[in-house]
Image (cartoon, rainbow, N blue to C red; front, side, top):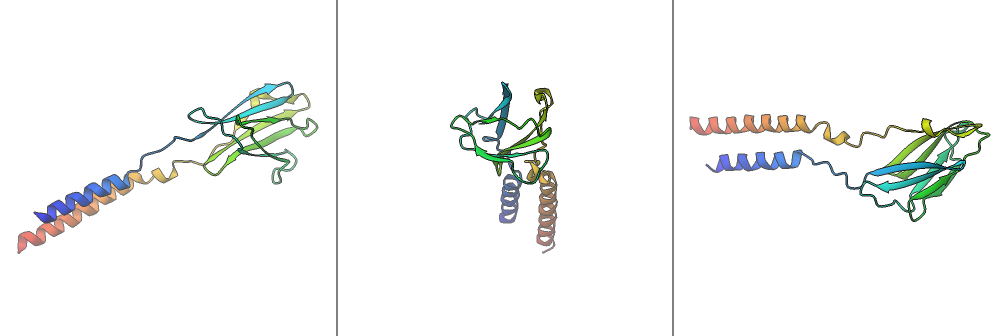
Length: 158
């Protein structure tokens, strides 16, 4: 009977450990609004708290590899983006870093910021480590079942 209890306990432990629960307590949300010819960007966490002192990196359309501007949000998570209108095209604005990160693409023309055309750059899939969860569960059940049947068959033949 001890063998069955051990197998049951190990299977239960595997099921609890192998199935992660998604935590999204502090995802980053970026809002923006046009104020005159500038774009006011506000970075907040999903619970509504501002993201103060968040890193801001702005890339111009003519040089998307070298920062045009590096700055920080204020204590309210706000940053004012005032692009050079002579540099028409898509500006990239990165907000935050690591797991608290967002990137918005701001089209600018000689008429100014095209508010309706602002888009978000697709984030890396933050749930990537959850994709194999079901496969690991099936593998765990198969291994557990195989080991337990082998163990029980040995015990019954003795």
